[in-house]
Length: 314
Image (cartoon, rainbow, N blue to C red; front, side, top):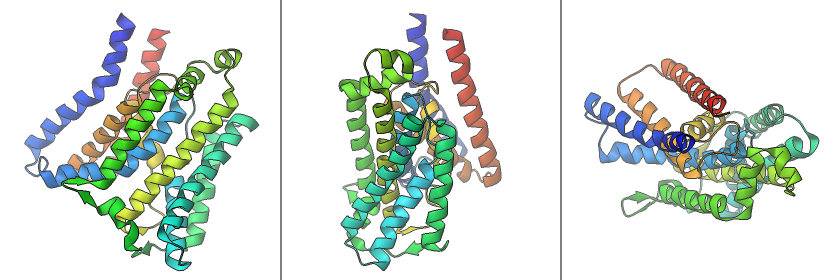
């Protein structure tokens, strides 16, 4: 009963934190609780939170991905380059971005699951590779004024709701269903709860671990496309620090860094908390350098709380 209460507190603490923080920023700034600012928060959440779904699947399996930010960047760079300089149909270029994300995820998954490299090393190396190729392709220069065919993905509205927010919610609903109602989701949770036990239970752990990285890469590609469409450009700073932001969102959203625990939908609230926090900090004119220090502190505190909670339960 006590463990169940702790788990519920963990899962819904991000919602409570959002409400408390929203009240504080509303009092502190008259511009925070406005339709324009709230829409802006959701727009900033869309790409990051979709990338965070991929990180969540990987974290649930007991691993992590430090290449997600650069996967977002490189997949969007490939897509933009094909559209702008090779006159490729924009939708074909978008599909190429998704394929590129899957390939990056496949490389990570192969190195972690089949070669046996630590996830930290494999994905950090892939991060550097993606970053280098993005710089080579763009010559470290932004690619702007992209075709209007894909503009609606990041800048379109369905009534008062941005289309990218609807896409984000659709992905959360789909992946939450997969995580809870399908064998794939249950097996990923089982692997995160105990890889060796899952193996002896007949679960092909290597295949599932590799699959989580492929899905993570695919979702990073989707995030890259949405970010590219919203900004109408790509640069080597697209997806910057997403690897840390998605990890913070996962931990704040109730996922355990040891794997096997949490809900996908909680990651959405973790992302909203993160974006709302720094939106409020910007409105209060807090120096961006201090904001990065605060972000690092939030990551340390969140993971420390998770480690101490796991230690107490064990």
